[in-house]
Image (cartoon, rainbow over all chains, first blue to last red; front, side, top):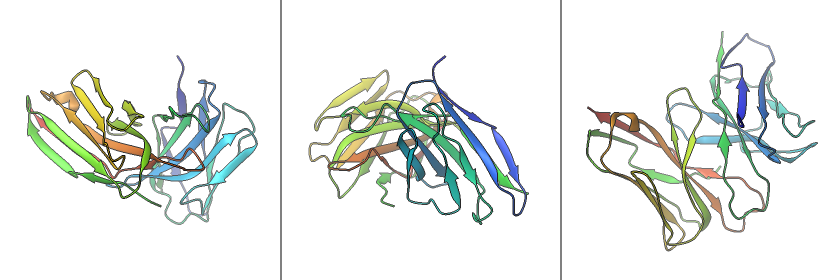
Length: 115
Length: 113
């Protein structure tokens, strides 16, 4: 089936530890995104990438890092600099920039909690 | 970051009732998208709107792109228990340099059987 796969579903982070969330898509989409969701709030953009080997900071990039070495993969690392990492993380993809019929497709999310 | 004004924040209704929710902004949008999110899952796209005044249906769901390009509404007719979830609107700004979408804060829908 075509879609976006996030793993793991649940992740626990210890103090001072970096953790990496995986996102893979087989939709052949150029653009990929990472969002953070906190209870009762809308989605906030962390990072996005419109093409391989290029990515841009979103609204809340501090304490996070990404890479885009392959079209289908866009991993997110939550670093120890992120002091409040507990949240639900959503990866998304879209066909590509500049399209009039833009729409985002989401993965099933990763719940990150601090031990 | 900018967010859309989505209302109501929550709704508690009886099965069979109709539901209406809306999103408004002071900015002009090119695109409106409506998503539904079940607990612990990612949002699923319900309806996409690309033209001012456009009215689109998906089963019991109907959404419209406001004529001013600054608002959109979603209606659900004859609600059923599986309609429970959080509904998000998302809009793409006209003239935006990227494909970033701006999301509303969500409407929590609870349906009493």
